[in-house]
Length: 119
Image 1 (cartoon, one colour):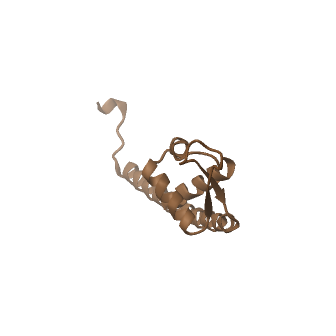
Image 2: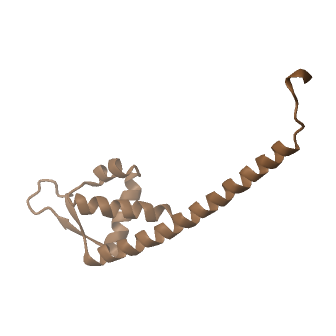
C-alpha cells in the first residue's frame, strides 16, 4: 500500500513541478533515489507519465515529467483505492482501541480498591 501513497505523492509533485529532478523528488517525497527511479520508470512504461528531454539543456540527463491524460484518470483510481484502504485501516484501529479500552476497564473493575489508610 505504501507504493500507492508514494505514487499519489509523486504524481502530485510532478504535476506541480514537471521539471523536478529525481534528486529533488527524493528530498520532497522522503523516499530513496532507487524508489523514485523505479516509480518513474513504472509510470512511464504504463503510460501514466511521459518523459521528455530538455531540448536546450547542457544536462543531457535533464527530463520533464509530464502526466498524461491516462495518468490523470489513473491517479483518481489510485487515490480511490488508497482511500478505501486507509478507511479500512481506520475502522480496524477504532475496533482495536475499543477492545483495549474494554480490557482496561475490565482490569480496573476487577482490581481491589485500596484506601489511603491501607498503606
